[in-house]
Image (tube, rainbow, N blue to C red; front, side, top):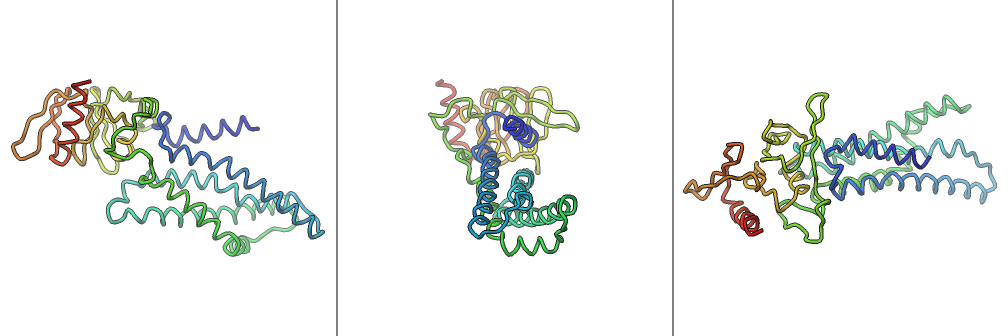
Amino acid sequence: MIKRMAQFVHLIKKKLWPSQQRGAPIRTQMMLMLVPGIVLLLLVTILQDYLQAQRNNYAFYFSESLLFKTFWILFIPVGFWQFFLFRKTEPYFTGRTGWLRIPAFIFSATITHMALYALLVFVLSGLFFSHTYAVQGVIGYTLSEDTYKYLLIYGALAVLQNPKSQFRMTNTPANPLQSPSDYLQQIIVGQGRSRFAIAIDDIIYISAANPYIAIYTARKKFLHAETLKTILAQLPAHQFVRVHKSTIVNLAKIISYKSRLNGDYDIILNNQHQVRLSRNYLQTFKKHMGESSSG
């Protein structure tokens, strides 16, 4: 049973975050801890029902207790699904609308959870119990009894999944204690029904193509559902650097760069593409180039 559950969790992780199978961000790893945590809560609350029945001298029905404890189980699929949507919609919540992401996540997750819970109790009670619990009644019950649980759990998940909660941030120096395995080794991108694995060393540069990013290799360009900020945090800091608000380059693919005489520079890459080096990123770029040449 435990082995099957572990395989199920691994399958979900592989399907939802194929590009992060290596060097997954801390928030993804912590999100996966939701599964054993919810299972533990389920068992504890059923035990609590049993002890309360013993204390008050009334019958304990395991099936009925389990029926209403499906409330806890739903945190797993709803949490993963909302996490998936949270990441996919990240490019649409920027600037002034960025603060809306957390309340939007909590609200949508709570409404989805309530609806699924009421429907699940209605269906299961109709199939296996002598009394069928009405959908409206279950929604009223969970609103009065469980609202604070929705807010606490989905609020914590929303804060955890916020990009600002990541431990590795954009344009920050690499932690010397981190090993190379902490970074991505490849990125899995999809085109229609096909999936392609792009080795990190094959990437020449990455540019913004809202709501996607465009990954350029010597062969072709690939679109990927990610943001420059989050992808840069997962790439080797000594190899990839941001040179413009919309561009990341692989330092190993640079042939030359020359001044535009206005503070900006033009970078020539080994695929003969030319990208802009903004004056705002110049000092960081020169520092990385210096480290690269000295190393």
